[in-house]
Every structure is written in structure tokens, then in C-alpha cells.
Length: 167
Length: 133
Image (tube, rainbow over all chains, first blue to last red; front, top):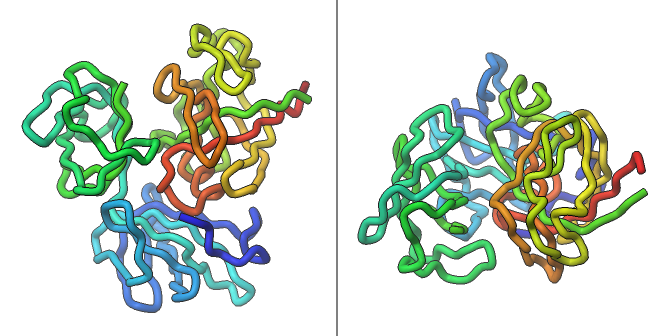
């Protein structure tokens, strides 16, 4: 996805990264409580700039996300002191680990370093691709392979993957 | 100054006090490097050549060392601090945006988002200037 923020705002000094829980959201903006913090952050949406993601390969300009969802935000401080969102990812997560089970259309992966849910179930979006943008061939997956996958958290320990590499 | 082209992915495990160097923070401009000086070793020493860089010749970087990194897809650069030891995915010669690169860098989400504005690509080709050489 190309970067959308104007160059005069897209500087290191203005850059803000926020990952946490959405505590409120509207068409104008959201409040996010960063993980490990008690100070919520207010961010604003700009229809000319802001892109949203919630699953799959596509982004949208339609406001997406609900209170309680995990949000990952890349944003920039404008001249009025507003934190303007460039991208907001809803419930996005990366998984790294070894395949311990291959089912009909799902994988069970054991993560080596995860603090929560070391074993996760991975299903796939219809448009899922590998890291070279080639459609995923499910027949390639074997128990023991190391995978890096990214997708949407559906439930604790359950993700729907849109991009995966297996080795 | 040595400049090489390699591949970088991202990870989300830095909690502010962990990682090989003890100060890995997902909310800072940091990255892990496959060949970390100080007794950590070279995780990709057996990897073959990819765009002129082989695992055995990959230069070592130290904890706290700053490098100049440029995202070759977006043309955006920044100084990045090495705070962890990692080889994301083994011996992988990634291809993206017309560049190939041995995957030897793992960025914090803060860093990857700064360069890309999104997670979409998953890995990116970067030029790395070892500022201390």
C-alpha cells in the first residue's frame, strides 16, 4: 500500500506509532489505550489520507474497528496538534512458529516466543498469498515447517491469514 | 562506510526490557540483526549469496550501534538502533520492488510502520550503511 501522508508532515519528529485497545471510535477519530500505558491517545481520521485494514489484502477508506478491538496505528502530528492517522490496522497480528498439525484447510502452529496462546489455529482468506504475492497452495504445508504469517485475530488463538511463508 | 542491500521483516516481541541487548522496545526506532557482535554469533553464516551479500561475509553490528537504513520501495531513510539478535526466517533471498536481499534484519513494528506506513508487504528491501566503518 503506498504511503499517503503529505511529505511535509511525514517526518521523524511528527511520527507517532500507537498499538493498543480502542476505547472509543467515530467517523472523526478514535481513542486508543496503548498496551502497557494508562494514558489514552486521541487520534483523528482524514478522509484524504487515512486507510483502514480489517482482514485480507485490501485497505479501505471506510472507518473500521470497534471498542475493544486491538488497533495498530501509524500517524503524524499536524500543525494543529492533532495526531492524524495514516493507517489503522484492526486486530492485526503476526505469527511465527512451526506447524504441528495440518487439517483440511487450517494449520495449527506452535509459536516459540509467544507470551499468550503459544498454539494458534490459522485459517486463510480466499485471497491469501505468500510473501512473493503468489496464491497460497495449501498442499505445500507440512508438519515441522517454520512459518511466518500475518492476519486478523478472530478469537484468542485463532487467526485468519492473508499472507504466509513456509520453510 | 559499508553499504549493502538486504531484506528486513518486522516482529512484535520487544517489551521495553528484553531482547539480546536488554532494551528492545517495540515503540522505538530499533531492529534486530542476524550477526550480533559480543559473542552472540552469526545466525546466517551458512547462507549463500544474495544480491552480493552472503551470510559468511555479513558484517557484525553491536548492541546500541546506529545504522542508516533506507527503504528501497518507498525511498525513505532513517537512523535505526540495533537492540536484538535475530535471523527472521533462516536463509531467505527475498525479492520485492525489483530488489533482492538476504533477510537479516527484523524491525520493531514502530520502525517498519515508519518506513512503510503499513504491514502489507511483510518484508522490504533496505540499504544499510554501517556508520561506524
